Length: 273
Ligand SMILES: N[C@@H](CCC(=O)N[C@@H](CS)C(=O)NCC(=O)O)C(=O)O
Image (cartoon, rainbow, N blue to C red; front, side):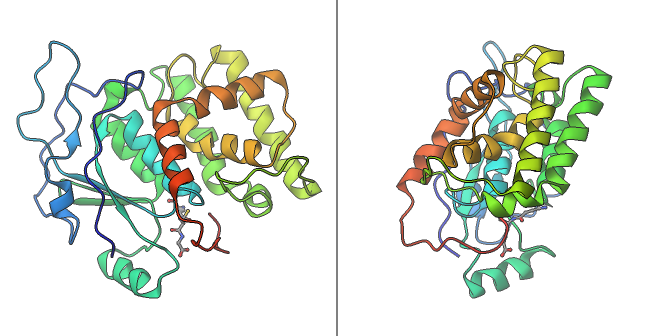
């Protein structure tokens, strides 16, 4: 497995502040190979006037290609929105030895995967819910119960649906296809996504799906904003403004810049990304 990159800096200005509350202590069992990189990583420093947690818990997010892996992007945005100061471990999902190593480490070789304080969490929705429990102040879910149920519904819909969009318009941040012809099956998915966005923006007033602060829903739909840009999908003004707001998030900018730097020799994978 390639060496994990250095721990990330605290959230950039404009991103949400880290929660003040230190998470409950979990059994300390460092993840294999990534423990060194995780040293010193954990919840980013608390807001002004609040003491930072005495001992920073270790956090490592395992991801794959920043250009192609939409699920990795979601996991990364969730961690950044939650104020989790994590190290990144990069794996190449098409390398058989790495797949074998990932399978040894957990029952799933899929990314993203979060290792935090000896816990291993895989599957993006599980990571989102875990981060919300860890840092409720970060607002990954809306405070209003009805809005929270709505938010979870559209996150679930993204997580389990839109297969046509995924296969016809794979995430490829570096690419741009002006005038791309969208197949009718994917068009249905696009119309549904735009309807979801329109309802949220109308109900909660934007600029994000649930109002003035990004939530887990924005992390779930961020790769769609990227795809709509790559494939030049015509959008109404509100959806266009929403995509612009998501693509301008500090964490999204950081991810995009890193994707642009990714070597071209990386094969576009034929699995769902
Ligand atoms: N349902 C999973 C999907 C994760 C997923 O499909 N990840 C892809 C990368 S974007 C993966 O790890 N693919 C590796 C492979 O199939 O070899 C989640 O929510 O995290």
